[in-house]
Image (cartoon, rainbow, N blue to C red; front, side, top):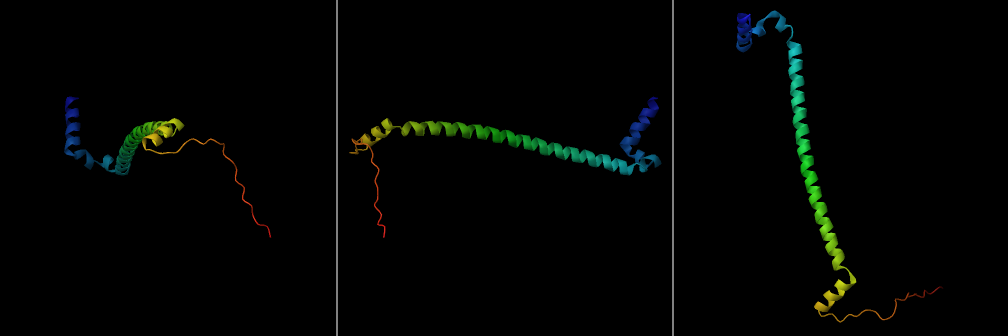
Amino acid sequence: MAKKKNTIIRDIAGGQFLIRENVSKSWPFIIYIVLLIFIYMSLNIVVVSTKKTKSKNSVEIKNLKADYISKEAKLQNQSSREQIIIKLKQNGSTLQNPTHPAQKVKLEVDQD
């Protein structure tokens, strides 16, 4: 039994098993299996690459969303009426709050 294992290992390592008649009939099947293994490995590489890209994009989206929220909050704070009045006073503006409510202006159109 030990001699049979040694000869099988020696045949596989030396390549002698390839010249046997029953192996030579199986070449199309062997090529088919090798091709399937190659396709499987290629698809696996593509999937891993896609997952890495998705993970990087997800982190980038989270960072951009946080940046957007902080900028939006800052802008809302700066555009409040009180902040605008403070900025105008700091810049030496003489603008004052209106004393009369806004009025609608009507244009008269000549009708010939």
